[in-house]
Length: 318
Image (cartoon, rainbow, N blue to C red; front, side):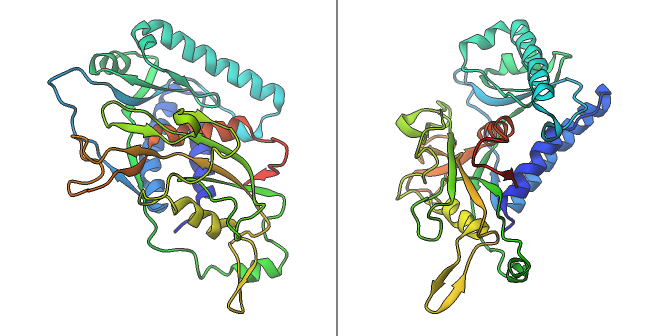
């Protein structure tokens, strides 16, 4: 199991480092989409391919709309003034796109702050119109990812690193997963920030898992694990323990995570799916509801992290 903070930075840096030239930007966008699926696979997040929507009635899809916009600078290297200017340019580009596509106003459009991206539900006709827009680099359906964990980092030489004085002090690790049990003895006192990004979808009968059934939250406890009884809801706590579990002695044996002195940012990005839904995303033989993550919620979480870099208590976002 590869640690998740490398995933967060890799995806965010790829999206935010496009060149001035339009053609190169489009190429980078396409590479980002392909790389994103590969990184999710390395994380142990299985990619599910939704089936074609029923033609009996008009349906909507959750889509990720990437806009053509020359961005030569990296989000992590900007001072406050430069970052503010960059966000203004992104917002202007997003607003211009929405003005050209007024039909999207019927949906809950979510503009990302640090990326030239819009997340929205859209009909097949609206998707076609977006793809025909020369100012739109790409439109793709938000994929679904299932939590899986087949192996962990048990032989990477972490103890040697700790002995040399490198244990993650002054850094925070973002865990984008099914939530983190912050009161667990292995993680007590580690979580410094919580957030939740989840989706209500009529197509998949998905229910958001944020507090009060909202789709977005940064409230206290918003990063707690999804409900007991749903398969995979302990996945985020497991990953957090691998990343930054505190030094603990069990049966006389001392153990810890890779960076026991690091802090954690717990971000819950999964949604609950009705196993009886016609799309059968929980599996054709499923007998209970499941949790899956929309790609769009993962991107929204990364945007939240990029926008809030430097927040008090975070230290360096690793």
